[in-house]
Length: 175
Image (tube, rainbow, N blue to C red):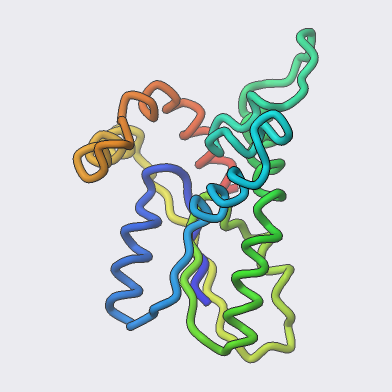
């Protein structure tokens, strides 16, 4: 079981695809796809935090206008709330791979060390958690621009306008 986490633009999907190809792993799953399925089942009016990106999930939190919470804490809190919603489906994917005794690569921003708590220590599986990061802001900006060339629907302006939030989320994930 290979668990690949990291923020937007860190290379999770690219690494997962390459590793799966090289190792012949046929079961890969992204947390973005799991979240998309959940979004179809739970409308935005019912669970708005699920319908935001991980880096701006905090915008759906019920925050008092006079709250003195700093941006980094808001971003981390929003992420944690969204990550906890996806933990059940991530856990289900992992448990099925363990039950079927097949290799799996689970990748996405919602892959977090807390997922390891869900894996029975008595299992004989090899579980490898990895957290990817791009440690230079200029390089991460460049990666976000390049993504648009590879997937035109991923408009780089959207991500670049939220770069500070993405950078803050990455710092949280690395901590």
